[in-house]
Amino acid sequence: MTQAQLAKEVGIDRSYLARLETGATALVLERALRALRRMGATVTVNLDGDDGPPD
Image (cartoon, rainbow, N blue to C red; front, side):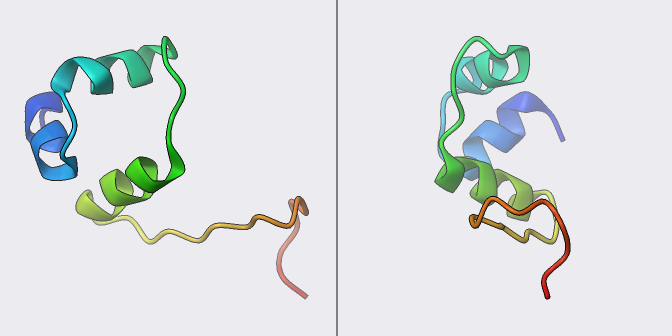
């Protein structure tokens, strides 16, 4: 998948995606989840600060 294709699928500008890839701009969680799902990834978000597996 190209940057242009992913950007279109996620609803962002390709240049914004390029800045994300280089670390020049911060990532918004909602957009990250949308992008990962469009690429077929299974997404689990842990917001409790614990890096370990769930109890």
